[in-house]
Each structure stands twice: as C-alpha cells, then as structure tokens.
Length: 94
Image (spheres, rainbow, N blue to C red):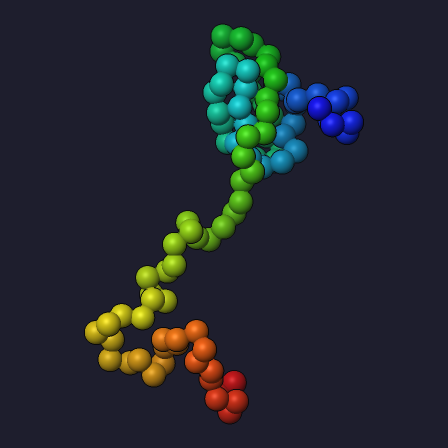
C-alpha cells in the first residue's frame, strides 16, 4: 500500500458521496451513486464499507461514431461532407 493511502479509510454507510461513480460494498453489490447521495446500508449486513470501482462520466456518446457523420456510398451530396481526412475547406468558406 502506498504511503498516501495507508491511513485512508473507505466510506461507510450513512456518509455523503464525494465522487460520482459505481461503488461496491463488502457483499459485492454494486450501485451507481451521485455526489451528495448517502451511502446506503445493506439489508443483511447493515452498515458496510463502500469502494469506488468505476468513475461516472457524463459523455454524449457510447464509443460509436454518430451514423449521421459517416459518409454513405449512395449519398448524392458528397461535396458537403468530408470524405477524406486530408480534405481541406477553402479559406473563403470559413
């Protein structure tokens, strides 16, 4: 364990969540919590420790390119779309 983390304790049930993310309790149950929420108690174990397993990112995508931005083979308006990464717009069209 590193020097900075050896004195650090995981949050317990009833404490406020400081970082948005997915947390896992001692029983292995995962729950997504937002900043300002309280860590819930487990129904069987009662108060438990919670560990951050995954950060929440508020992205607008799911890792895929928007299909509207992909050039189609049967598209009639190829002039208005960038079909090659090296294609440059004229300086007068800015």
